[in-house]
Length: 152
Image (cartoon, rainbow, N blue to C red):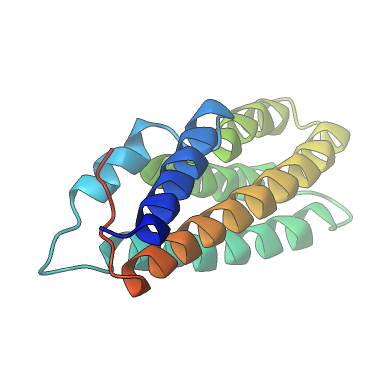
């Protein structure tokens, strides 16, 4: 194996470790990766892309619902619950964590708290989206260089 491939593998491995160490991802993401094989090489990218689409729709709905004159907290809670579930299913730990606080503010019918959490969820979502897109680019570079993606 040439040194460029080895260097890419090391970079990918270090980057992936940082995502776990910084709490962006948890073991659920590892389990997701273990479901990927030769018969379905794009499994993780496809699942994560669905998560991105779903999250963006939910964040738009949450923004609209919280902008109403009288907020329907049941609706807000339902959206946050969906977001918490989908972020949990791909291992987006920090998004999931903010959703837990968000639901507490829904229970209290605290508009200010909900708006603050919405901002935090949007920030964490944007961060994890950028991190995962970078991870997938690393993987593509490694494969393009003739390497293989090491399993964690």
